[in-house]
Length: 135
Image 1 (cartoon, rainbow, N blue to C red):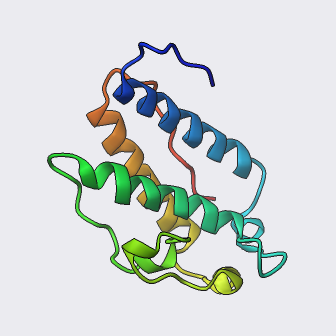
Image 2 (tube, rainbow, N blue to C red):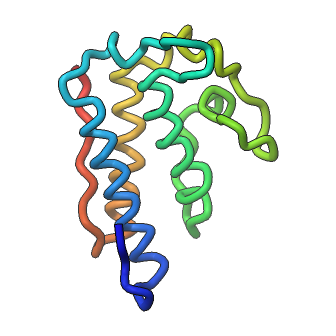
C-alpha cells in the first residue's frame, strides 16, 4: 500500500490496521472454526493462532501505548500468542499451537472485535475495520 510521504504516522497506522483486519477477514472467509485450528506441520502455525497473534500484537504494542489503554482481556494471551518477542516474556511452543483449543473461535472473535472497536473509537477518522463473525 503506497502512502504519501507527508501522511502523518498515526494516519498510516490507522490505514495499516484497517488493511490487516480486512485481510484477516478475507483469509477466513468460507472456513470453519475447525479449518482454522489445523496445523499442517510443526513449523506452520494454525490460521486461528495467526489471527489471535495479530490481535495480541495490536493490543500489546499499539493499544497498550495509548494514554488510557484498555484492560487486558486474558493475561494468558501474553504467552499463548507471543511468537518471538523474547523481551515480552515466555512463548507457547510453535509446534504445539495446533493443540490449543482455547480460546475458542467465538472467544477469539469477541476479543478481536473489542480491539477493533477500541481502534475505531480512538482513530475516528480512519477507515472502519470490520468485525470478525463467529460461526
